[in-house]
Image (tube, rainbow, N blue to C red; front, side, top):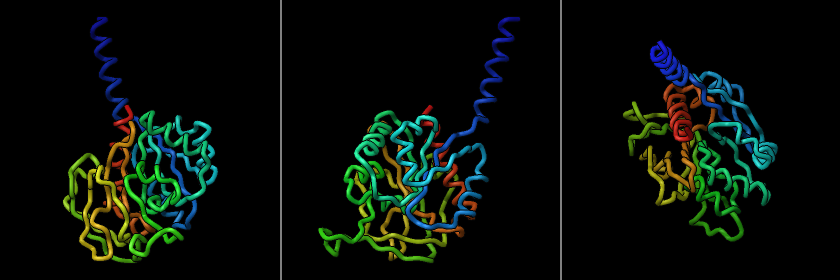
Length: 237
C-alpha cells in the first residue's frame, strides 16, 4: 500500500509540474509602444505569469533583489541610465544563472556600458561624438521581414520560416560567441535577427522583431516568444 501511495504521489507531482506557470519580470521603458496590444500578447501566453516594471523603477527593483522572485527576466526597454550598483546587480544575476530574454529595441540600451553588449550578445550603435559614420546602425520601419531558421533549438522548434511586418536594424554588432537562430535576407537588415548564448551562467535569448501591434498579434511571434520563455525557464530548473 505504501508503495502504491508513493507511486501515486510521484505521478501527481509530474502532472502538476507540467502545468506549472513560468513567472516573468517584464521590463519596459524609454520608448513609446502599442501598450494595449503588447500586454494583451503576454496575457494570452499560456502558463505564463508576469509582473510589469517600468524604467527607471525596474532597475532599482533589480538592484534591490526583486529579480530573485522570477524565473525569467524579459526586457522590452530602451534605457541608458544605469548606476554602478544596478550594473553590479545585472552582473550578479548572470553569475547566479538568471535567464534573460531581450526583445527588439533592448539592443539599443546602455550605449556607454560595454559589458551590456556582452550580456545581450550584440549592440545597436547610435550616433555619438566618438562614433565614426560607418559604425552607426540603421533602421527601417514597416517592411516585410522574411526569416529562415539558422539553428533549430527549443526556441525555433516547429518553424520552417517566419514572416513579420515589422522594423529591421542594419549594421549592428553581433558577438561571434552567439548561436544564430533566425536569418533574414532583407537588404536593410543585418543577417541575423535572433540568437541565443550563455553569459557567465545565464542563458540569454535576443529576438529583434517586435516593433508594434502588427507583430504582437502574430500567432507565430507569440509562439516564438512563448518558446523562448519556456526554454529559458526550463534552463533555470
